[in-house]
Amino acid sequence: MNLLWSLHVVSLTGRQSPRLDRLTVDIPVGTTAVLGQSGAGKTSLLNLLVGFERPTSGQIQFQASELRRFWSPPTQGLWPHLSVAEHLSTVAPGDKQSNGQFDQLLADFNLLAVRDARPASLSLGERSRLSVARCLASGAQVLIMDEPLAHVDAARLGSYWSAIRAHCQANGTALVFATHSPDVVLREATQVICLSHGKLCYAGSVHELYDQPQSPELAEMLGPCNWLSVEDQQRWLSTSSAPTDCCIRPERLAVSVDLASAVEVAGSRFAGSCAELDVVHLSDGARRTFIHRPARASLRPGDRVMLKVLLLLMALLLPGCGDSEPALTVKKESYWSMPPDGPRVPAPRGMTVSPEGEYLVLDNAGRLLVFDETGKLQRKWWMPAYSVGKPEGVCVLKDGRIAVADTHYHRVVLFNHEGEVSSTFGKLGSGPGEFYYPVSVIQDDKENLYVCEYGDGNDRVQKFSKDGTFLLQIGSYGTDDGQFQRPSGAAWYEGRIYVVDAFNNRIQVFDEGGKLVAILGTSDKISDLYYPYDICVNEAGELYVVEYGAGRVSKFDRSGKLLGRYGHTGGGSEAAELKTPWGLTVDHRGRVYVCDTGNRRIVELEL
Image 1 (spheres, rainbow, N blue to C red):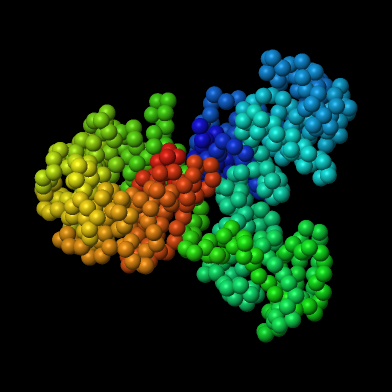
Image 2 (cartoon, helix red, strand yellow; image 1 turned 60 degrees about the vertical axis):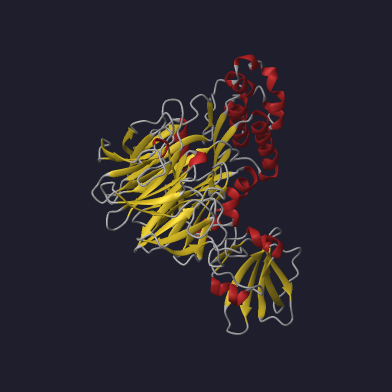
């Protein structure tokens, strides 16, 4: 199981403004921190996770219903009539309810000396530690802790977190905790949810947020940083500048004395782990403060210094700060969980957006699902037959019909708006108008249809009129120019059809008469493709390609120039992890939607 909770457009009202505002996020198995300043909505979110409160609107689902949960609330929630030891034994599983079972746990949290005391006689720090120890003693598989150890002195905080970490690792326990401390998040969590004024700012990998934040505000969520624009890099750094704004953490900024430099120290404040360095550029008097981690406080006003990014860490910086390929800048990533089909959660395979703003998804249960732009399911229906295999490609035609490439039934099925079959065309065969495995269907501006197919040497694209009459064939099986090995997706734009040639790792471009115009992937205009499986085009004519083998989305202009990439192969526990992505589409807002098939979800990318 990958997910604990799925929240969809969840809001929680407050006195003057929402405590949570249209929150859509998945919380995976593992250790997840909920980060934000006071009033950000951390406690409100955790209250919903444990069922202490219910959302005013939206949906929240605990996906792991068979797992037991236990809560450490912000008020500790201790029972005044029970001793410290009794707090632990009361919540323990039946075979561990003896007080003597918990001496080690009490020792871990420095509570042995007060084991017989009641809460009224405990300090705030002792109550805080008892609430956490009780949570661990419960034996629950999912722990929710709201500001755990909030009143504990800093000198002992690390040892108490070590006890929490050891317990979770030894028992395979999932943990969700709220905090306002970036240091705790960096040390303890693998995933982080960032909130600000009740809104979701970020959800994903802690390491990605630390190394590759998309804005100064997000960068500061995990501590101090130097945010440099392209102009700042050119002015202050001795290393070559990146083509995008860049986050440089203190440990990655090297400062050294250089008598020939035009950068002069104006002041320095040393604080042990970090120092603030005020500098002035002698060429024009510009001033700037940098944060770095010196070995000692040795810089003095008047010193000339050189600033550079440590080269060994360049690969960890924001895309553009050392990467050889441009990154696709994503403002926000969110997920749509697939609706279950009985006891299982199917995986999405193909997707499109209608002119009316409906989002249609094919899954491997044989269903066609229709969502609104928030990811709320509007209606669904099943294919006429699906026991032999499931369909892959879907397209909404200009007359409102919905065309589906019914892959394993060797045909194209056309539905009306409500899911009733209006017609079909095609049958098994290799002749004109026949199919082996049709996998994609699109329409041009003259309402002609193009169907991609593969299998048994039938790798080709066929063109049909809107009523299903065969018009012409494009390509054949092979590796030569104009030939295909599994043409798995296509897109139409201004008289050109762009076909992803999956096994040949390229994109081939044809005119409406089937003449080969260009091949993208055989020149230096396009970076390497790894099993490209689907393609779509936005209103500006830019191409998005989902790469099944690389677990990523790549964006190109129509000449094949790489504009950016996003994602890598992974199990979905971190942001940007895609597993065997199968299909994608782009809507009128320019948002990209990926069928993250292996992780059984739709990934929405706001660019």
